Amino acid sequence: MDEASKKMLQIFLVPMTVISVILTLQVALMGMDVGNVQSLQRLGATIATNPYIIKFFSLTPVRILLHGIITIFITSELKISVKTDIPPL
Image 1: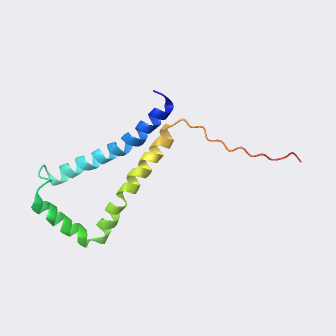
Image 2 (image 1 turned 90 degrees about the vertical axis):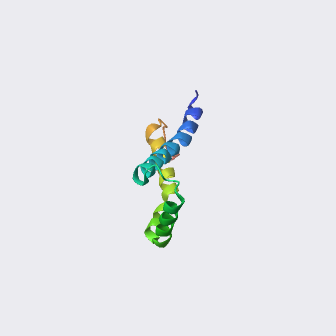
Image 3 (image 1 turned 90 degrees about the horizontal axis):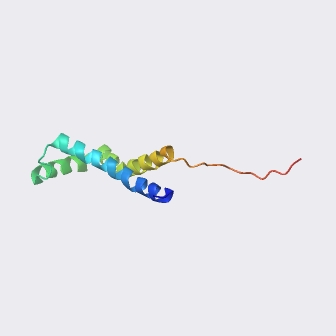
């Protein structure tokens, strides 16, 4: 694979891995009956009335995206250089 294909796979797979970890924790905390309608309604009522939880969940995509971008920058071997044209004195 060329370098561009590797970077595109990283951009796709890193957030998917984070989402997989989050869903695994959800199943571990709520049990296998995650899809129960009554428990989801109770959970929804709790979330809808707590402004801190609403803010946390609304910023979750930003955290996932930033984590992915930072991971790509750390693991990549991109050489970033700044060239300035300063005339001699």
